Structures are given as structure tokens and as C-alpha cells.
Length: 278
Ligand SMILES: [Cu+2]
Image (cartoon, rainbow, N blue to C red; front, side, top):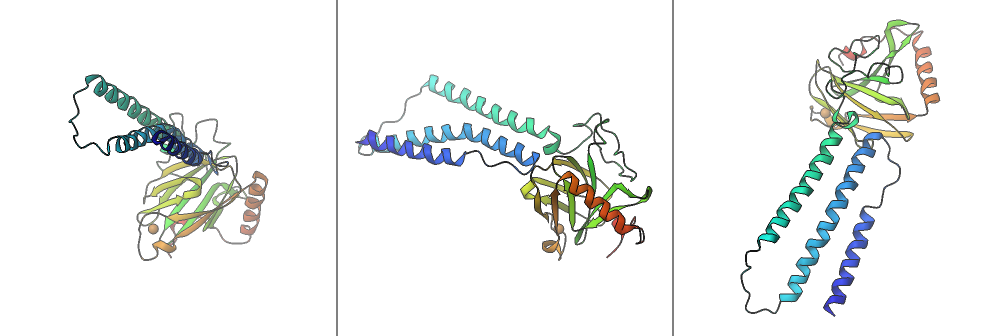
């Protein structure tokens, strides 16, 4: 009877946990994909351990609940060595899997160490200290300067110049448009003090410091609109410091850039947008 019940309980637990690790639908970005991948890997380790511990616990409770004369456990060196070694192996696996992911540009951020062939972004705009895409790949990468300021976001596209004039380029406020299936480098900075860009659905997060660039990269897979938040308390307007990332097809992206440029041919330059005070 007890065995039957335990069996049913274990089967129920396994079914429940199997549901939990059911691979999710296609991820919205490379970053999200990598993080979910690590999560699943860790679950494959954690679930058997959870089941093992719970089964032993339940078995012990049921088996010894009427024992009026409990005896202390005896030393069992073999068992001790086994669980020490097993734990070490599991911890090494977890540590290695996580560390491996931190070395990936999309997760650990774009740094000179992670990107030894990097050059300064091959753009007309100056990003002092920012690490750009590897040499030879800079043509395939879209670079956006993400500027935080109390309490709004400015997105500059210094590669998208108007009439070849290097000081006039596409710039938007509140909404960043990026093409899907394309590597995008975001050079994050601030004009006043600490902010942080956070797009949970694309698994993007980075601090924004004045006079410094922190570069993150992503490849968005799914078209759509993604909410962007400020994730560093920056003052009374912090909670309203919102933005959006619009992921569109590559054709739509080009059309959007052209539209922005043609809208700017009559208006005055916006080169100082990032430095403008509210
Ligand atoms: Cu903030």
C-alpha cells in the first residue's frame, strides 16, 4: 500500500516537473535563448536531485513514523565520500555552465577582453572608450547609442547620416527601432547620472554611466514591441522613465531610416540632441 502510494507520488512529481521544463516557444532574442538554455540545463540537474531528496524524505517519514526507539546514525565513510564527490561534480557543472555563458558577448557584455579583435565602432560618431564589433564584421552590425537622461531615452544612429553630413544622423526619443536577425550593438551612456536600461523580454540589462560607454549586444528574433525600463532609481521621474524597442524586418528598418532622414532634410540638425538639457 505504502509502495503504491509512494510510486504514485513520485509519478505525480515527475509529471509536474516535466511540465515545468517543457521547452518554451521560440525565444525573442539571442540573449533570452542563451539564458533559457542555461536555465533548462540546470533544471535537468536540479529535478533528479529534488526527486531523490523528496523520495528519501517521504520514505523515511512513512517508514519510521511509528518507531518508538530511534537509534543514532552510524558513520558510513563510503556514503560520505560519495555525497561529497557527487556534490563537487554538480557544483563544478553549475559553475562551468554559468561561467561559459558569461564569456559570451551577448550575456557578459561587449568588452575588450571578450572581443579582442574589436575596433572602435566604425561610425562617424565618436564613442570614446566603447568597444565596437570585430574587424570585418562592422558592416553587418547595427550600432545604436543609447543615451539616458532624467527622465527619457534618446537613441542615436550615427551610421545613418543625412546627406553624408557626419554631424547629422537619425536620432529618436523613446522608441528604438532595430532590424530582426541582425546583430545590434547598444552603446549605453548617460548625460547626468546613474540609470540602467532594462528590456526584460529581450533579456537585456545594462547600467548607464555618465562619460562612459557600456556596450551590450543582441540579435532579436521576433518582430514586435518590447517595453524598456530604467532599472536604476534615478529620481522622482524614475518610474515614468520608459521606452520601447521595436523589432522590425530588415526592409522595414531601412524604410524607417529613410523616412527619418527625409524628415530631417528640412529640419535643423540634431547633433546635440544627446547633450540637450530638458
Ligand atoms: Cu531611473
